[in-house]
Image (cartoon, rainbow, N blue to C red; front, top):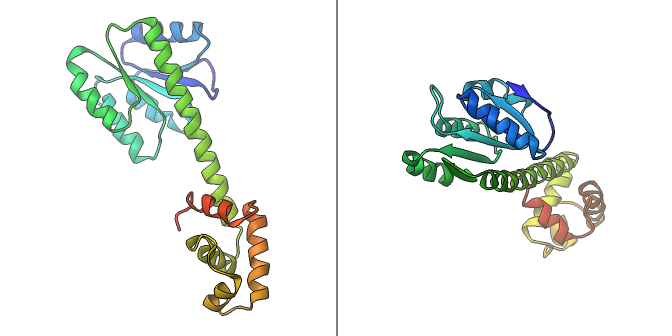
Length: 209
């Protein structure tokens, strides 16, 4: 692996042909992108622990592990970096299948400089949005785990009813006093960083309840 930077907007170029790797490294680098290059899918997977953001620009036909197989491996590891495939005419049906599995686009050889740059920019925007969603999801899960067992019980009743359960009905369901439920409710709002039931319900959609 060779790398210019480990930045958020990094393009991970995977191709077993050195001329193509160097050409893409030069083109992307000269247009302001950070680039890491890999000689094979195996090389990329061996360095996957260092890959946290950006997008993947990969040849679809490679020895051992091809682009399609790499995509399946990444999906199995819940790694959802946007993927762009480089392909020849005969690979179009294969790339269509890859797009059904979540690939962003495929570049048909020979592709223009502008097409490549536009596609990479689009993929990076999508990648950044996914990274932001992942961070938000993780933060919400971490907040939820700060709730006590009793608070989680109150939380579930509140979000399931979308606020239609009164403190009295929640208290009856959990065999608690209304005062205790009100205390738990205030604590839940504080820990989950919400101001009302509507916000709490919205956050709950990010949780596996």
